Amino acid sequence: MGYSDPSIQSETILAVEDLTVKFSGFTALNCLNFSMQRGELRVVIGPNGAGKTTLLDVITGKTRPRSGRVEFHGHDLTRMPDHQIARLGIGRKFQTPNVFRSLTVLQNLMLAVKANRGVMATLAASFSRNGKGRVYEILDTIGLTAKASRQAGILAHGEKQWLELGMLMAQDPELLLIDEPVAGMTPRESERTGELLMAMARKHALLVIEHDMTFVRQIAQKITVLDEGKTLCEGTVEEVQNDPRVIEVYLGQDHEEHAEDRAAVGLLR
Image 1 (cartoon, rainbow, N blue to C red):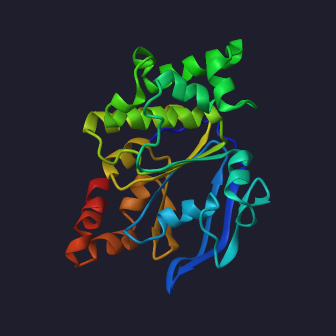
Image 2 (image 1 turned 30 degrees about the vertical axis):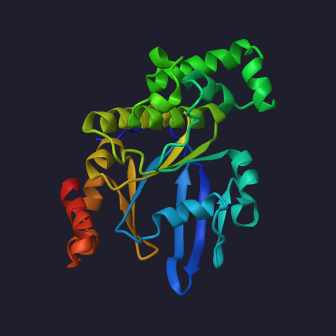
């Protein structure tokens, strides 16, 4: 079952209030209300088109809502550009890994370290004792210490994903937004990714979007189910899998293109 940290403080860091997003008449988010606490690992699931990625897009400033607010520590993110949002302490990982392929694993992490210096200066300068220690701590956490000198471009798919997660850790955001981290992975890579995210959750709040329900069972503290741009229900894996509304949403779809969604609720059991 998912990771649970008893030291989690009950402090709301992210608050989504009556958020509405429309695209050419299609309502992606419909008066959505959603919140997260400091140190929480939250998984968001839902059928295709439920509004999961749109939620991340609004939080990071990529998409502007029709109405509503998103507050992070009291800052209204809907009025801020994406670079200012990132500086507040919000990092995002997309489904496809985005690493510097021609640089080594170590160099990728060096570039990501939170420091007030330019790219070339970061590569050329000696790390402070704390900075160097932080990089090697991250290498150990993501399991790539033995491949620190290897070019990122020749890593396996799962290893590239772990490296990008490490680069997010190096930036030291308080909230990490992670979109389908195990897409295309082998079962063993998925399991290792779950272990990594649970380790990251000891120092960061994580909002994870995922379709792989075996993986969701591994990591989830709390699940939010979205449907048609609204929160359908929230709770533990057991509470969600037994909620009749979730069963209806996933199993009540007759169209062939939703076969994966219909299977998902079964995997929750």
